[in-house]
Length: 275
Ligand SMILES: NC(=O)c1ccc[n+]([C@@H]2O[C@H](COP(=O)([O-])OP(=O)(O)OC[C@H]3O[C@@H](n4cnc5c(N)ncnc54)[C@H](OP(=O)(O)O)[C@@H]3O)[C@@H](O)[C@H]2O)c1
Image (cartoon, rainbow, N blue to C red; front, side, top):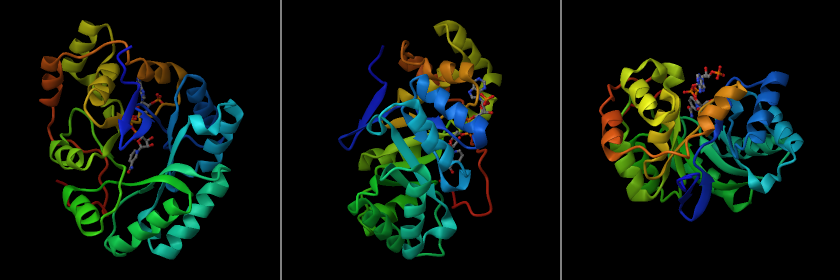
């Protein structure tokens, strides 16, 4: 054990590793989420957009693990960010999950259709009402974070962004570390592409691990960085989880950083101007 199973960010303890649940829907998705909880996952990442909050709620209840032991995140889509809509969406999220709070509520993607300050005020209100313990954003750039933090004085816990060895997030990390925020890495194993990297496979052999485990370890070994790999397969969930019994050297950490080549897999019409 290397003591990195949890991160303490802004005084809050969060499991370093969570389960991404995109496409884990229906009975199979629900069973997969429950399996992950049985395998020890305590952070679950969902979103209205994933259409699986009912499944997430049921899987948690059926697991028998007390709600307070889990860290549950959901996200509101970018066309629902007007304040009155946010308020409705939060209630709907809680109704589908069957809980009276989420741990973290995120703006799924930024939009210019609603003033950011209004959205953040609505998120702060949801927090003040106890409907979410923490608030944050996803897919925010340095410029958007500057606006949220400096202009609107938002108390943001997290920015969930794409981050893996093929995409540097150093500029964003520098800004977020100044604010003491968590960077939760989505697509942390680059949708499986890390298994094709010679360097990551070589390091895997060196440490007796897989390329995926080396990648996840590289992420969570960085200050204020977590990761939410998704898998529907118990053997992959186990593999992704078993990253707390080895430590990458500083030399190997740097070698993985050097793989960055600006490769971004989440590309959309509505994306902001990336850093
Ligand atoms: N905020 C956002 O805008 C945003 C965007 C994208 C994703 N996300 C979140 O981030 C999560 C993760 O991203 P992602 O699901 O797109 O990509 P990912 O976690 O990088 O990769 C998932 C893929 O890798 C496979 N996989 C997982 N573990 C493996 C292992 N140990 N060995 C071999 N293959 C493995 C999975 O297949 P198997 O099921 O067969 O294991 C799946 O096809 C999402 O589920 C979602 O919660 C957020």
